[in-house]
Image (cartoon, rainbow, N blue to C red; front, side, top):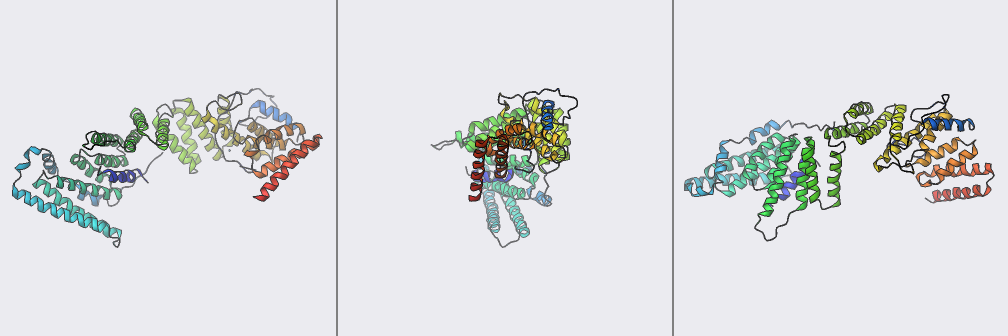
Length: 509
């Protein structure tokens, strides 16, 4: 449901008051700097530390991966133009009606004529409501009748206002007509025509928040974000004033309503690239948030604005480029992320863009370039003693780096075992979600170096839950074989029992 429909509904309610295959790529970042020195004779593949490559090479000797919102104006927009243009002279009568000191200055003849005009308008309005409920009419005929009836009602009520500017019932009915016409035009996406209507309506109903809200919604849809924000603010202030000045005994502010006003105002400022008022709006929304969902929404938008220290244009660009990548347009995403990175203000934002760029590069066929990029990101990331990133948001970067190294190892497995082992061991050194997969692959590849093989297989066995059933069976079968080769009969029996248990559970399911 788009923004206009949502707030129009609100206004109407308120007006009265991975296994063996290639694993998908996740995230980036890494740990402590590795040694950069390695024997010149050792080939160091892209994305792998030299020390890891040297060690893997030694082991191998004994063994063998604008947010541009488009809007199309309705072809019938011009049709509605003639229905919503109201003579400026009408406003002198409407404003005259605000001065109650001259109520008795209207002659009886004019009052009678105004009543007749009012009745004509009311009749057209009744017919409009009846026609709107008629399901037998096709959409084209229905719109035509609606337009004719609203036009007639508008003309009649405007005539009545000019005859008697002080009649509250007529003023209210005229406001209702303007609103109905705006809603009808809004349904046809004729937002500019609807804006004309609501601009007049807010002059007629300055004490009600809904006209300000509806005007703001239409301004928002046409990209007039500063004006939209101003009218969201007026809607909020008018509502709070109506509660404050209410004559009812019970005066209670609807927090959810104020939350929506503040959130909409902040959204408009965000699209207008106004950092400070956007943050102020979200903070205000947070004050009125009552549910955990509302609080989360406001907090997430605060984080979004602050992603690159208030550089809102960069946040929009990041989202737009990420959308390109999600649609499979990796080449465009790669180019866009490369152009965005120099415009960023903070290291954390640059790190995230490197992560997103590496994923797009991998999908675009630039696997080694992606691995190099993630390796650099991995090495400059601060980590804890256990190798996990100090900043938990960087875990996804670890996941992506580990996954890409694992996938590259699998790709190289049939053509170059040494290079494959280097990628598997690099993946095994990264603290990521499915690290056990890389340890399993390393253990299998080192099967002729039994002790090293068992070391990696035992490490994988510490986290069996991250493995699929077939991978777990593969792990424990290899442990049985390798322990038998070492003469560890008891260990082999232990792991054989695990294999049997997994098979029974799989059969039962």
